[in-house]
Length: 74
Image 1: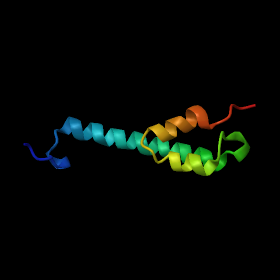
Image 2: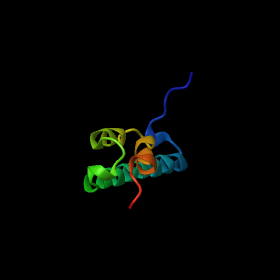
Image 3: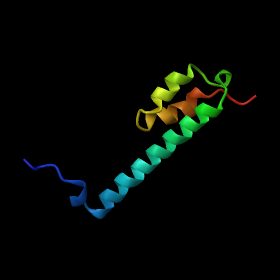
């Protein structure tokens, strides 16, 4: 059975993909949280605290907020 590799032991390509994935995740979450803070509650489908909590679910939460959490602009 092989042991788990440390991040420093991964090939450069794998490390780069992990870093890019983390940056994308944080950018999505930051954008969702920023939009939630600025958007009036009347323009959000459901309670804002729920969407804030869901934004912490990797990738799924922020994407779900942008797809279903916002009401269309009038």
